[in-house]
Length: 223
Image (cartoon, rainbow, N blue to C red):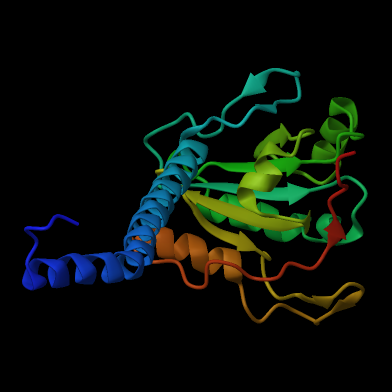
């Protein structure tokens, strides 16, 4: 303190000294909040970017000749239909007539159909025999790495997934409500979910609901 300091200047110095410790936590909190907000914003942007990237990334699946193919390559489509099946699942096999009916009614150049075999133990030869035995004439894919399984959010066979023209998942779930539980079926289905979805797509209407619970044989998990 200088001898020339007046009482008023000393009072101002004292006030600044007293309030500085009280201001520091506020300043620290302000900068911390801004950092968290910026971090959250960056995280949201990264999440949206990752979803868009996943939508555009071509899935590496195989045809029965072992060639890598991309069922999302065509651009002049209204929707893409994938029905996950397996050779040995009795429920999936019982759905063969309904799958053939839906394929005959809705499959066009703008709504391609594929059967997807996700069990890596099923050989192309066994799948080809299964296709012939059950009278399937639609496209067929092998998904031994579960690329489509994850993208379609399916877990059992039979289970359907419908993607829009832009690659977004519009629907995943049961074909209809024929099965109430494993081993327990109605005399006939009363709700035809996949048919309803495809009718909505053809009419340009929104798909509701976007997911239902499918009953069937669990798709084997990868080691």
